[in-house]
Every structure is written in C-alpha cells, then in structure tokens.
Amino acid sequence: MAKSGWTVAIVGATGAVGGELMSVLAERSFPVKRLVALASERSAGSEVEFAGEPLKVAPLNDSSFEGVDLALFSAGAAVSEQYAPLAVRAGAVVVDNTSFFRMHADVPLVVPEVNPAAVDVHRGILANPNCSTIQAVVALAPLHGLAGLRRVVYSTYQSASGAGRQAMEELKDQTVALLSFRDPPVSRFPRRLAFDCIPQIDKFLDDGSTKEERKMVEETRKIFDLPGLAVVATCVRVPVFVGHAVAVFVEFDRSITLEAARAALRDAPGVVLTEDPTAYPTAVDAAGDDPVLVGRLRVDPSVPHGLAFWCVADNLRKGAATNAVQIAELLASRGRLAPQVH
Ligand code: A2P
Image (cartoon, rainbow, N blue to C red; front, side, top):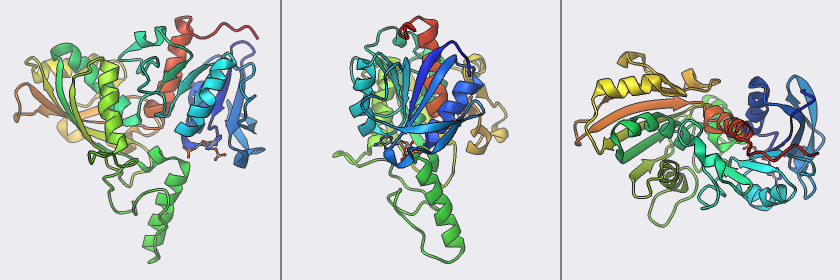
C-alpha cells in the first residue's frame, strides 16, 4: 500500500461493487495511504483483500469516517442517506454509487467521459449514475456532439449482479434447482430469473413504469443537461451474471450519416466500436473490462435522423466501480478532494 496518498473508505466492502472498487483502486494505482473496509455488523471481523493484502472489515458506525479523505459508498440507498452526510461532516468527499442523492440539485451526477466539469462544484457528495445509464451515455455523448439528441428509447438487458452478490447466488441456486427438478428459491428477484427474463427492476411507480426506468430517464437528462429531452426506457433483468446490454434507439435534431457516427464512436473515450455487424459484442465480452462495447450501429428509418445501436459494459466496473474511481481521479487532479491534512 502506498505510504502517501489518501485515506479511502469503502462502504459495502463485502458486496459485489465493493469488491470491484478495491480491485479498481489497486489496478489504477489510485494513491491510497490507508484503506478502511466497512460493511454491516454481519461482516464484522471478516476479511477482504486490497492490493494483495488481507484487510479486516469494520462495522459501519457514526465514527467510521474519522481521518477519511474519500468515502466510496455502495451499500444501498438507506445507508447512503444516513451515513454520507456524516462522512462529509467528518471531512471526507463522498462518491455515492446508490440512487439516493443522484437527482439532488446540489449533487453532481458524473460520467467522466461525458460531463467531467461537473465535479468542480460540489458540497461534499458526488453521485455515480445508474449502471445502465452510464454505459448508454458514454456511447451517446459523441453522437449528441454531432447532431443533438432529440429522443432516446432504451431497452435494457441487465445482469443479476446489478442486484448484488446474493442475487448472483440466487440465480446460480435457481439454475441448479431447476436442472435438478427442484423448486427454485425466489427471494432477491420478484420472480424466478433462471431461464426467463423479468421486465421489472426496482419497484413500480404510479405511472406503470419502474424506478429503474425512471432513473434512466431522469439521469440521462441531468448528465447531458437537457431537462426537456424525450427519453423512455424498458428495463429487463436477464439470466446473465455480469454485464448489462442496452439496445438504444436515438432520434437526432440534425441529420447524421452512419459514417460520421462511426467516426465519432471510433474516437470516443471509453468506447470500443465493432463495425462488423456480425461481430457484435455481448455481456460476456464486456465482463471484467472497462470499455463500453458498441455494435449493431445502423440507421433507424422509422424516424427522421434516426440511429439504432447495441452497447454492453461490465455493470460492476464501468457501470459502478470504475466510474466511481474515475470520479475520484478527476477530483484529485482538479484539486477538488479535501487537502490531506491528517
Ligand atoms: P454485509 O456483507 O455485511 O451485508 P451487495 O450490493 O453485493 O448486496 O452488497 C451490499 C454491501 O452493503 C455489503 O457489503 C453489505 O455488507 C453492505 N451493507 C448492507 N447493509 C448495510 C448496513 N446497514 N451497514 C453497512 N453496510 C451494509
């Protein structure tokens, strides 16, 4: 572990995203002086690994953030609601991976490839967008720069890991149960996921959409600073362990050629474009890596100035941990992390 650098707390260190946060911090050589691994009382005393070293997990409490410069939260919205303000009061900058603060007016919602300048004005808390939103806006940003977004339609194919470590276990247990002619256990998902797809992620809202779909709509508007953008989403859980896919249909303000769109995506940061339509990327291709893989780019002739494409990304990495660490890197490089006074 580096001797100089920041004291970093991971809230939810035993979770699926928490584990990736530690891997990504180490891989990217983020300057960590001390890592504080936090989880619930249930995990107290267990160990996680950071930079090849075992680390004891401490239970989260009111004094967990003493001396912490940067706190990366991924333990659910209720935990962020209660503890992120305490972390800020203790002097830490918070990058929150949950939905709790994302739409707050004074909380920047940041995807470094899209709106990096948003980190410059914050009051201690910055939000990491929803996993499917992140990968979609990384691919949309260069196209928006070319022709202006007018309407976006998202259909997602989201993996079990988006619901956490225990949800991944449940998909495995359901699969084994069904292949053994037993009843599958169902507790983390609203229905059985194995060998099926579930058009419900998060709870239902009054208008018949789900909260996950609402997040994609509102967060896309906030990240692009286009409050009036027409956006609609259908979010579907699929029996995949890691890696989300999104089919994106876009209508632009101005005409855009396929060749210009290809050129913009080829040059876009964080994007890998597959131009051979038959060599489309899948979630399995994206898992374990950071780029947003884009394929199946084509004209959508059903609207004026329309394009359609398919994108996949590792939801635990670019959809969560990598984006959060990139935000921390941006903060550090722009002098927006608190000075290291401890
Ligand atoms: P624990 O393992 O002790 O339950 P995932 O998203 O993979 O389900 O992980 C959720 C993470 O959030 C885990 O590290 C979990 O810890 C942590 N967590 C859940 N509830 C709390 C809580 N009340 N206080 C602190 N950490 C929590």
